[in-house]
Image (cartoon, rainbow, N blue to C red; front, side, top):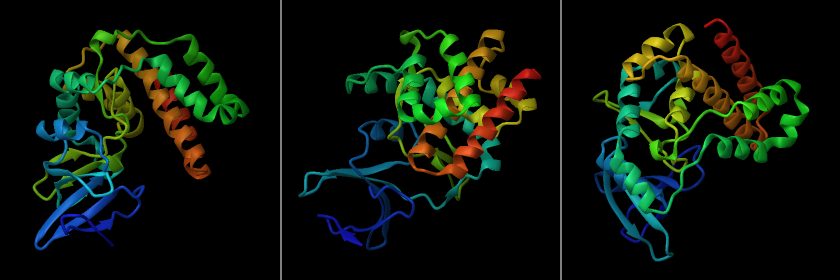
Length: 262
């Protein structure tokens, strides 16, 4: 247990990277992040993330940001079909204020080729050794989807179920914003579709989220869906978690098969 400059008792959150804490001060509770992204205040104002209570510098030069402690739990994979997911992502992706805020911080947009190259840089040796992954990767390089930087939005970048929490009042929030970036909204949308939504329900999910169903859209979803698997695979290779690597490769196979039946 650590103690902050303001006498908040900080207990590291289990499974975190060491920068997130459960904070208490008397009867007060808070989720406290060390050196959180400056975007946190903006997404909290939009009620996409839990309310920001305060932010202050410590004697060591770090910044601590405290958010409302949500009494509830992390979503399970099965709960990712909740319509609130669509609503929260829609609010995030349609906010021009968040785009302006992010740009003022000096952030540039990431196009599909840059995102793909990042995956390759992180795990190129393992991709080259796996004929299935290499074949998919090479096809993706040949078929980069269109991207207009003027239409980029703020995306979360890691919308797996562990980054969604539901309060006791049933309100859902998106947390852990260190992966946020300016990019195509399909970065987030395709991850949800590819990992959590039954292919038979993709059309319904997209229509509810405000998308017009067109062949070009489905083609881009295939590309960004494959990218979501490669990003997870690269992460798990880096963590030397072969079980999860194989699980993602299996998921990628099933995802590609689903598109063959559309």
